[in-house]
Length: 350
Image (tube, rainbow, N blue to C red):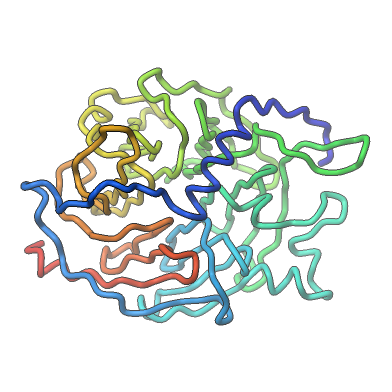
């Protein structure tokens, strides 16, 4: 596992700094926040129905993914955790927290291999997170980690991808495995892994403990340049990438992602800081950051998968997820806790 890999960091350090500040503190947009545009006035009734913290401590979420009725999070102080909401969307059951294992002398091997260095959420879970079946794939400031969750309450790291400093016998960053967003193919054993800047990999995950590449990295089109990739989401036909000043759309074709200029143009009004998709809707956190940019109100816009406007949620998440029934949004917006918000679609005529 300690194969020597020489990192090619390019402008990664600069963008990591930008992204880290955005994730931890949020963007400081000093312009007046108006109401949604005239045709964007459908606002469902939303209310905060619960607050969640890990062990009653300050809870910072780096990433959130909803899968199979459970919310998976990376962050602090839990490191990596699963909260099951299948019984009640407003009252989760904690299935596991990696921090419990890291701090337990009898179980540290589940998440800390002495040959590979310590496992930390900043190093291996700060950026992308994807759950496919009983495996979690995540990426942080050093590299990538694969977690086996076949034992629901005892997840175990089974692979790690990073650089290695042979001289000092320490792990180092390898930007080939530092991904801001990860999307699992819905039916095939592949994972689309998006870099901060200009490329993404198509990874073969048929054997989760031994990732390989279906194809070499593919450059973003010139229209997609910006900094930096924040999040990604997908539907059955499209993949959406929140790129800060842009929302880029890819069409799924034969197991590959093909840039769609028409769909990207249709979404050009949104400066997407975060994004989430359910089987029904696409949720886009629009927050203007460019000079002289959008006059639309910042907040979460709810769209059809084709981009048609449906509703506006006046919330400003650092990171968020939506349950499969579109009844609740889970939001970390203050780096203190996770809020559960109930959406009353009938109030919006949906």
